Image 1 (cartoon, rainbow, N blue to C red):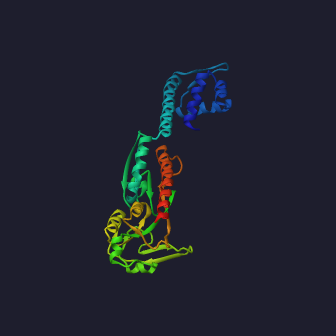
Image 2: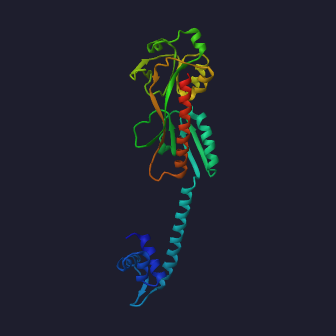
Image 3: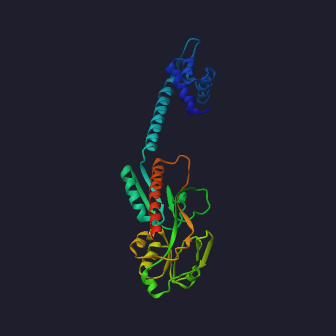
Length: 306
């Protein structure tokens, strides 16, 4: 029998003055109440209660056992209350790993979250390598490329696309590409973790898939570095729209081959477990989903302007 249940039953027998009273209070049969008490006595090898036809009373051992077990049960109830309070209100440290080139967008979300939940602290690492969430102790990762197959939970936050772009200065010394195949003759700045490597993939205006093999003088795992090189006229960049949207709005960058849309990806929140998700993680996920929806509307608005 479950030992904690037996302790609780024993306490009710003592407090109610008998097996029948305990049975009524616990909505349990008298026989089952008796079995729980008997299980404790068998475990201890000592009698806890003196039983008569009219009442029960504690033995000396039973008195000592009742006092200590009552204290243990009270402490367990307090532990449950503390755990419930902690779960109800986000608090503690939230460990995050995010893709480096969404750091700028994440900053206002984190500021809002920490204002809403001042009992939470955040330990954030930015990088483009997919980490082992469990082994490295992260609560959550935010990724912009598909995660590897695993048992992790993936929550889609928003869809997004790249945009093919370069600086006006680049076009001063290079012909404007008019066909997808022209990209093979341009200096293409390549992101090291692009899922399809040197094969840039697009969707045509007819909804078909097209691709082109590209090359160039720079490969990097830093999208921010590639953006800087692109702004300086260094080449053609298949850039995340959320990274260069403002550059397109201001004219610092121009869009190339708009009739070809880069294939769609998703920004995903990735975490180890769905069950018993802590309040600090769940509340951050909900805020992220809300803000990424707003961000998607901004991305779509920029895309239709350029």
